[in-house]
Amino acid sequence: MKKLYLVGLGLLVFNLALAQQRGVTDTGEEVILYADGTWKYQNNQEAIEKEIPTNPEKFTKDEASTFLLKSSKVNVGFYLNPKLWSFQKAVENPEAEFEFQLKDEDLYGMILSEKVEIPLETLKFIALENSRSVAPDVSVVKEEYRNVNGLKVLLLQLNGTMQGIKFTYYGYYFSSSNGTIQFITYTSQNLMETYKSACEKLLNGLVELN
Image 1 (tube, helix red, strand yellow):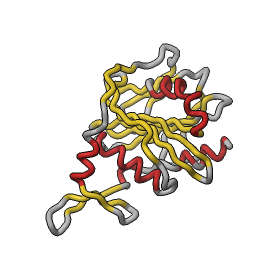
Image 2 (cartoon, helix red, strand yellow):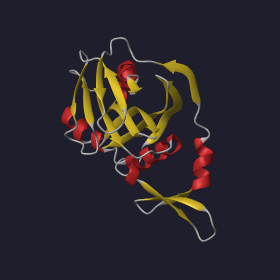
Image 3 (cartoon, helix red, strand yellow):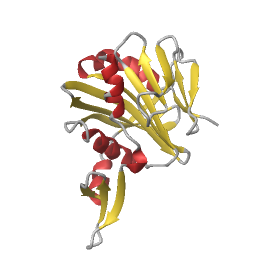
Image 4 (cartoon, one colour):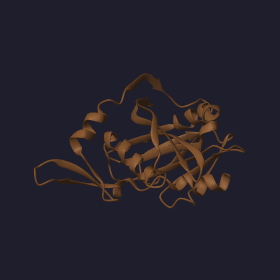
């Protein structure tokens, strides 16, 4: 089961920069073009994006998260509790920078980083399209903007099914002129409520470095 999560669910998220292109129809309408040949109107996308709520709470790193893991691609770091989490440079997912596991548990995490800047308003749709390429029933369970250690991030919870396993992604998406970060935890849907507190404590370790 654990190996399946690392290889299967961990490979669901791909390189964001290659996920889509923009185009213009012969009537002048802007459209988003996807790698599978599908497309949608840019204006429709923007209308939906405006509906994402903002959580008024300010989120900060957990006091027990004392170890700072630094990205080599983007000027950000990730505070974590090394007593609870094991981590390593990504092996199973070639697009990821780091992989995590809650020790002796079925909760996993990964960090995908790239130097290209992508508007937060676009990240949701890229994540959905990429995930649906291998799990067509993926849907958004929760979405909101958050202030995390002074950074504006997008929280997404995505549920779907792959090889008969009902999984859930719970993660932060962040982008600036320095690059883009997908900081994601994942497990089976039946375990999500059990692990949600651990997910939050890990994700709230995201910080921008000087």
